[in-house]
Image (cartoon, rainbow, N blue to C red):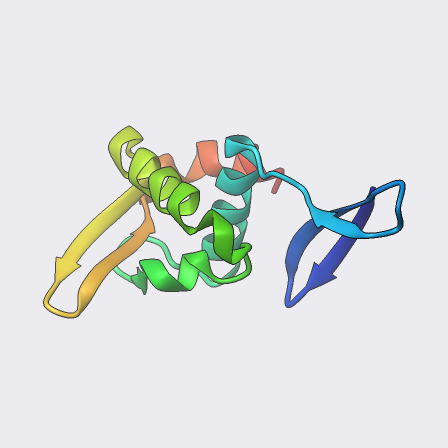
Length: 107
């Protein structure tokens, strides 16, 4: 397995026995940590929002549905706050949960 970093997004790549690379499946905890790291690094906390489409960037295109489900799950659990707008759903980290988020991402 190789760990590749492109645009500060970690990707796992397995090399098969025939030499071809295939994308590894992201687990929910890995994607949750990547969401948190991306939003924490860009200080998208509380009143500062970002579009859901920005969180999907960096994940493989065939995983868009799983990424959307993961974001919805984090909204339900309260780690991410949502703000519906006329131009799409905006999200931010919950400032009340920031200490738990720091523990999860290891900051």
